[in-house]
Image: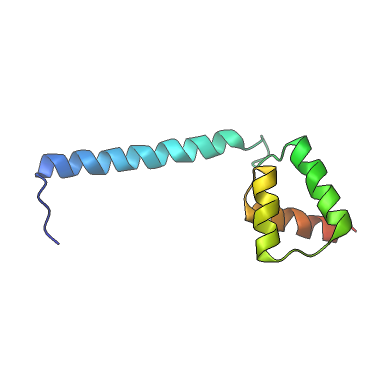
Length: 88
């Protein structure tokens, strides 16, 4: 695939993309606690506990809904639920 960009423009674009990836990486790292785990707010944890008391297994749609309400990812919901099952 040919590009209409000059070599300098291509280099600048690649550098900007790389810098953006680095910024995103650092933003994600800032969100993690010192142990390297993503933190879940106390409000989100309380909601997760409430949901878990009612239902110990969630389907994909339920995980997405819970994640949206908690401000976390569906993967974090899945991991949290698995951890709770293992603790029980």
